[in-house]
Image (tube, rainbow, N blue to C red; front, side, top):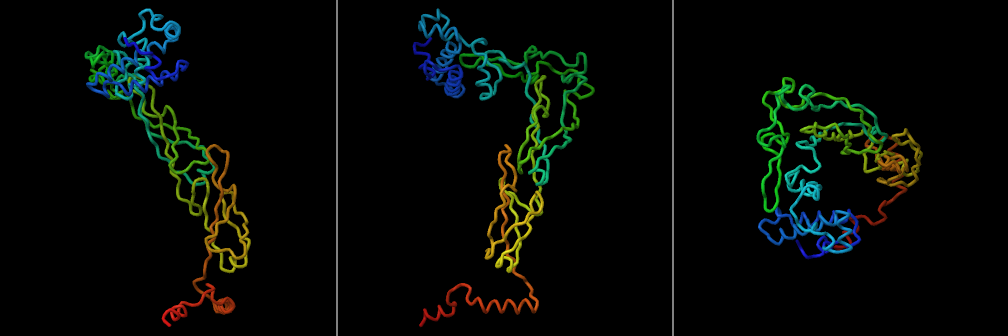
Length: 370
């Protein structure tokens, strides 16, 4: 039993709420756990102190008496009295995932014995850009496994094909001493189920699950993008030992579009215009996902100019805004000219002079060497 103040041990204020106390305990328990500090007596003592402080401050009645009378108010109920299931019922939740054991103190905490959540599954789905922008309601057929109805998931032929595991006595766990407390790990023979198959089920051949195909209604929200993952709870693999099934993750892949490319919530499109249209200005139609829309090309528009059509892009997933369509002007120079076109361009060239507004390269080199 330590003489230090319990609030000081957990490094919290005296008015700290239950969540803060639990969070502080979790942090210290992970920091000073013997498995992370093998052979360190100081770490072991600090771990015990944190456990002792949490045992008192997590209990409303004990905390009230401690706040009022100090240790004297605990009447011998404080201090480290060995780990027990009632005081540390959530200890397995705090450290179980970190150190690989689901139950400590010889119990499985609040988890069902031998039960484990099933594996998550993945399904890849291709959709069009229009479907990604507008959303889609569709059905997908996916392969999965489900609990065998004949043996109810035991893997043994009814009624006695699955029997109590002789190694763990049906508990699904075997306990052993580590340091100053007892740790329970899943039984290696029955893999935590508490039962072993002596006569395999004729339907699932001892697996406990059977392969099926299942049709799932899928709602794809508007605004999804390439790589978006949709989670469908309960559509993964069934859990072992009667545990809940995992989830199904649908990964979306947006097919390349013939006209548009996407950048975030904006759609990009290239609009070809002639030299005359760029120089004189024009009204042209540009494609959008909502249909063609007329756009003004100002006179003197330069190649690469980007014009914005607000509200013609993809919506955000929360539906609060919509991106723009960015129209890049691509000035097309004719590769072949008719006789009339050549004559007109030559006349135009005579009126333009030196387009760069500078002396020619030959004249500038001549000045350098003269």
